[in-house]
Picture 1 (cartoon, helix red, strand yellow):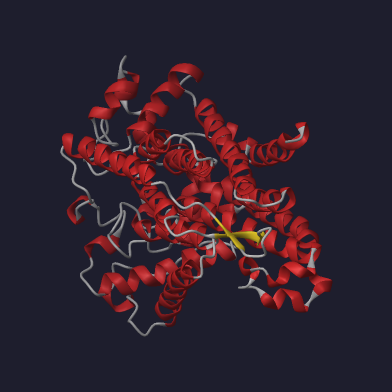
Picture 2: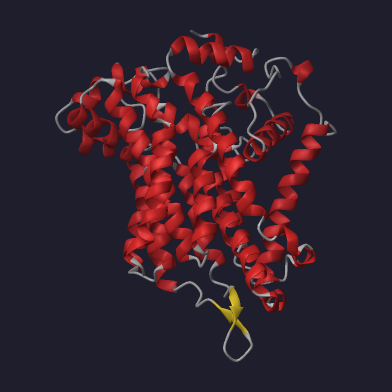
Length: 448
């Protein structure tokens, strides 16, 4: 590997960090006040260790619901090492996002993407407005930390390293946030040998080695350890409906199938934001039964159609041994648990939960850009099985350079939108002003 191979990753990390540097001047807002400022537990001498014996909201007036000791430990260490002012906490969030962006590039390269394709995908992850909430809100590092450990686990898995390391990193991800369970989609789908780009020397399609069964055993051990720790402090596998406040998430108070239709309509807004992150808003009043969507609501139907197509596409691609099915499956698997569709979660509006789904989509994008580049470099590769799902690209050779040409203005626009979006976390006034405008019937928006 050339000595300059680190330069793209460093550039991506620098862009990710520079875009959010102004958060160093932001205040503690919203849940930061409960979990950091007014949480005396964090300042206890052994709190980074004893955090593993308590639920996430220990030390606050709120009850047990989540088990995220890695995040709690990081907050306790953060205060000890960098002071208890907001700047040190914001700095760690910035660095976490920068490292995640660089690791995504490294992962894309490990999966076979050329440097330009991997850089474009990683830059998209670095500047996408989805990252504005997890970076701008200190306690939203509950999405930054699991993404870090998932990326490290994925890299260890692809590198064929010790299964125990993959299992340990996966356990750390689970101890950061429950939705990290989505990583299981990577090795499970990897049991089926996937086609690699380009033909083998004998002219046949090349395939990956498939998942080592030892890795699955290590991951299973990680899940068992995580569940044992959760149950050891009295938490169940899933959050109970009565633990979700009606003001923080009114969907939890709805019965079925009303909750399903409402959750699907809201999920459609989140999916749209991933593709077109203009401004996330929701004018619906979920406390008023007369405004709840019906199963024939256009938003419900569109959202359901997209999710079904997403899932069906993954199955078809996996059966065809197309490797892009794996990041797409991870993206969907990390989206569904936090979408209120399967089970109600602790919040109604949380753009930060799109962070890991975006990660999977960017890995898939790197793969798509790789195929585009391969078609441009060698028309003979158009017949390669790994490129077969995209024959239409060959019909427009003049568009071969389009991804690179379009990347710069697209990334610049997204960076500008992300810069503005991060600003709503500047202080309490900015945050709740934005929320009352975007979510006029959300009680939490009017609480401050």
